[in-house]
Amino acid sequence: MERIAKFEKVSLQQFTEDWLRLFPDTPEERIREIHENIKLPKRATAGSAGYDFYAPVSFDLAAGEEILIPTGIRAKMDSSYVLVIVPRSSLGFKYRLQLDNTAGIIDSDYYNARNEGHMMCKLINDSRENRTLHLQAHDAMVQGLFLPFGITVDDDAQEQRTGGFGSTTENSKLERTE
Image (cartoon, rainbow, N blue to C red; front, top):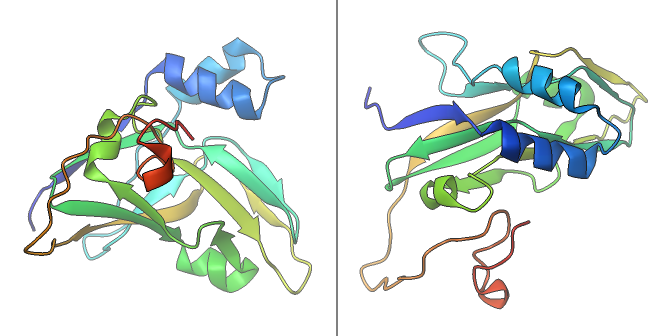
């Protein structure tokens, strides 16, 4: 196996800023505790392709509900790879748990974005059986796969990323942060 990436936590400052934007009533001591206890993604077995991303806090997600979760994680990877985030098979099967964008694409240059490459997961419980998903802190919630990719022979992309999520679209001029 080729070793092409490393997971890291974002800074406490970045995590606090993102967490408070989504959960403004959270005391800073609690945010610090959540950050300290973030579990870096890991493969469950030597044969696993995906790295499990863990819930930073416990939460319930009723059928039809969605939640945006700051993971506290960033990934430094070889520039010829992409990290693809997808639902865990078991949660998709049992709860129809989905990512709002169906699959998250984390580019190698996202690591250097203004938001430190902080990955967020917007989860939706699309259960048709009215089942509520209960995840405890440190339960696996999604998985990430590092995949190699190629570019066309006439590719001439020269722009540098500065923003975060959604920042590489033509209309944003690489300035959006979310």
